Length: 270
Ligand SMILES: Nc1ncnc2c1ncn2[C@@H]1O[C@H](COP(=O)(O)OP(=O)(O)OP(=O)(O)O)[C@@H](O)[C@H]1O
Ligand SMILES: [Mg+2]
Image 1 (tube, protein in one colour):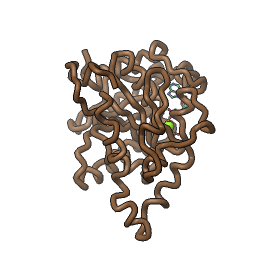
Image 2: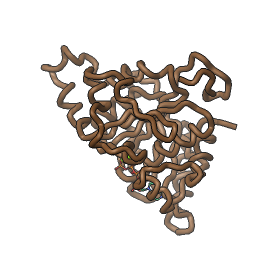
Image 3: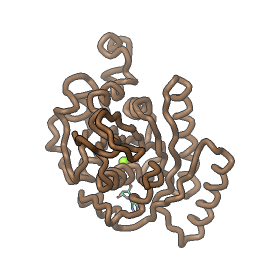
């Protein structure tokens, strides 16, 4: 644990409690994993102690940081079902602490829901929140990657978070996907969760195309009418370097400078 790392308001803090940021969208392939990965390396480059929790059974965070899923003995799944502690599963790569997943996470729902499991798991939606309790004083930011669904891992992620970022492609069907995610978050808020939608992040933007240009304008106009939900000024461009960094497992904030601008905007870092 860093003795004197910065926290979100740029003051020095010894007894911090992390902001927990969930990157979520019900639509697949909109850049959730790329956003989590690049935000994390961006925050580390600014001196913030940062962790990622992968709550998607696809396990793409491991790949994005060059770690082979096959080498993972224990994952976030074992922590959630009480068979490991967060410290037992931690990996560190590119300055980011990683709490990784693999296919086993898809067993979470069947394992923890249902009358026969209620004695062992009385609060199945709060397993991740409890697990984060083990590490939240160690970090300034904990970022959660989620799957494009409203499964048990995603519900746990939303309920464990302080803030949610929704990536969106400026294309018709993807824009509709935002509303599904917003409705899911509203349901969670109605259940008493104090989670805030930090904003909508346009990703894979090709602003030289008419379609994206018009859709981006349309997106900003739509959300101008809903002042509680912000569309970030920063947009992430579609660029081959993003895809390559992910497949090579070598995140590099110098090659993804939009994400550095984005974390500064999202967390009001000067
Ligand atoms: N800005 C970008 N420009 C070009 N390609 C990108 C960009 N961001 C992500 N990609 C690529 O697009 C694909 C989808 O991105 P990513 O895996 O981050 O989406 P996702 O929302 O996490 O997907 P899923 O819903 O399957 O988890 C990946 O192959 C990734 O490398
Ligand atoms: Mg993903």
